[in-house]
Amino acid sequence: MELEQDELVGKLFGNLEVIGCYSRDKWGAKLYTVSCAVCTNDRELFHNGYFETLKSSLISGKLPCGCSKAYKWTESQYILRCQRAADERGMTFIEWDGNFKGNTTRCIVITAEGNYFYPQIRSLLSTIKSKSQRGSLPRGEKRIPRRPKPDDVMVESFLITNVFAENTKFSRRDNRGYWDVLCGKCGESYCSKSYNLQRGSISCKCSPHSATQSYINLIYDNELCVALKFGISKQPDYRLYQQQMASPLKIIRHSIWKFTSYTLCKQAEGECKNILKCGVVGPNELADGWTETTSPSNIEYIEDIFKRFGGQRI
Ligand SMILES: [Zn+2]
Ligand SMILES: [Zn+2]
Image (cartoon, rainbow, N blue to C red; front, side, top):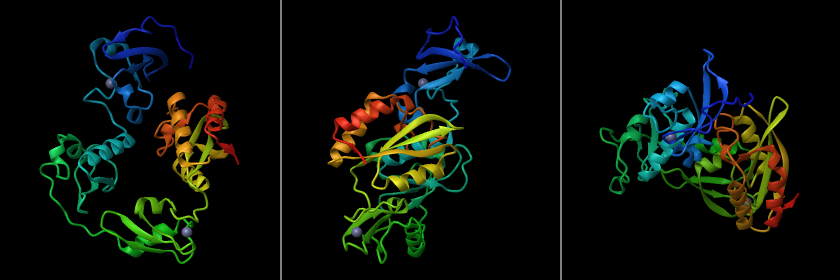
């Protein structure tokens, strides 16, 4: 929708700056797009830091952003917040225990000692974070010992990725999700988290692609290219497949770039994230990796940056 000229555009309301008016609510009232100076600092959580609100809310001081106690968090935002809260305690957030149903959803969290517990989201998030609490449980939460999934079920979930060489051996190292892998082809062994193995990540030398590759994918919405996704991957094809499976949008390969070292590859990605406006696609469209999306018009900038760091299109 066209930007409507409006007397509120450019005005400040506390931390909120009115950016424009691009749409209307279902009753026809103007919806203002505002940028919050606080929320915009957390791009991982708030994307570009833009929110929509009504004039009456702006005037009455009702906040539309994450600064509001009544902010309606999305499921992907809750996942990120739970991961952060668990990390702060030296624990690992695994997934929801059952279906997501708002802030009373129970989480599956593993402590550093490998114990499982199941706090509600609001309990995991409400506890005060301090260093002395690392490794401790939110108040009122009991440790519930639970057996990890049987080894054969786990191994099956690794093999389903179809990337491990025949006769590759997997053995569980501990209860925290670490596995020892002995490659059936090159004989190299390595330790990896089950999460990575389930994603088909190989760490031995016969990995089909080294970690010195970057890819550029194109994201289409109804035949219209709406974004570029760039990233580093040992297995750009499997990564593309994962993105296609997880997104309602159409994603296709643009190009793969090879670098002479992982450091250069990583630096090129960092430069893209620094220079280009990223996060043009939200977590609902691309849950995993939406922060490395940018406008299709930036394709030449990305290619220039890749070349500057020694990248070669292959
Ligand atoms: Zn805010
Ligand atoms: Zn190998």
